[in-house]
Length: 402
Image (cartoon, rainbow, N blue to C red; front, side, top):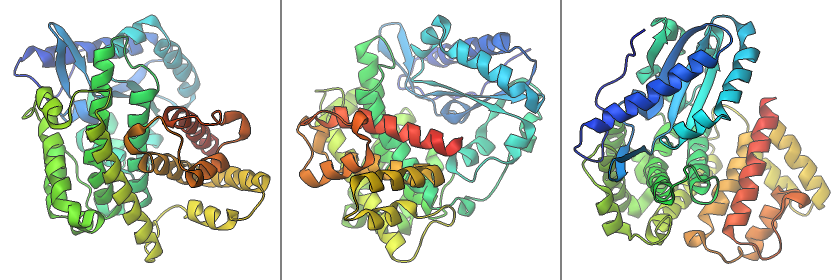
């Protein structure tokens, strides 16, 4: 069966063989997953930046091409009962040496499993909107995605904008301090710098998602950022400076900028240069204040519950055990809200990812969020708190999904 692969992958170099490298890597993973599945699949589809022609691939050393974008694949099941055996096979493959070699090329590999009913019931969020706009079938029934839920951008609940921003913060922390996504340190540094730039760009995109202005494709999103009144409300007097930064990263993703220009703009010291970290952090802090202000002004999320704010108000003066028990209830009811709040506030309050402990007020807040066995040692720096908080966030979200 012949692959259908979208042309025009973004390249940070003029060398045309980069698209061939990415296509070969994608096809290798797809073939491996199809072979590993114990049940026939209805279809395999490609989503994310590769499907929209925006995957970022570049040559980090002579004849050493890597992709800074994740590989997002969906496996469409023929029957709902196939889910358990196929999931077990996919999990086993993702832990194999072959998958490790594939992850040496991509920043990450995400594989979703979908029955037809799952596609029709996908949540109202930016990722679903993108999937409906650009996902492409690589193997199997080309009509498999006809069942995918489709909707207008103003149907996306504002809470999804907050969630998008928190996800980007978590990605940057993981790329900088978490898992080494590749064995090679230079490529890992590019992963983290790209994550910081992506966060900087998507700080404004999260405002678009929350205000009904989200759109598919980076050129369209950049145009929307330029004209959005909500973005101007969020960044205030820093709007023009933010838009200039956003244009730079949009140009980088479309191949009109190079990594040499990144070093010239922000410096080349550290996994993420301090200037890039700070500009990303300032953008996040400003947008999160805008989200909080919108809620205080009587514009709560159209879906979900404003549980994190209510929990904080209730928790003042309560014993630690009661606070933790309440947080557990919040996490089960709306796991992203409390966890996202913690991750974003940690990042926004800590300049340049510094090694010094947080201020006393922030440290108390973090301790409230983490059970005693999970807390870093006294005097721990950003990296230790970030690792612990990301683990707790994953646990909260997992508990809410069960």
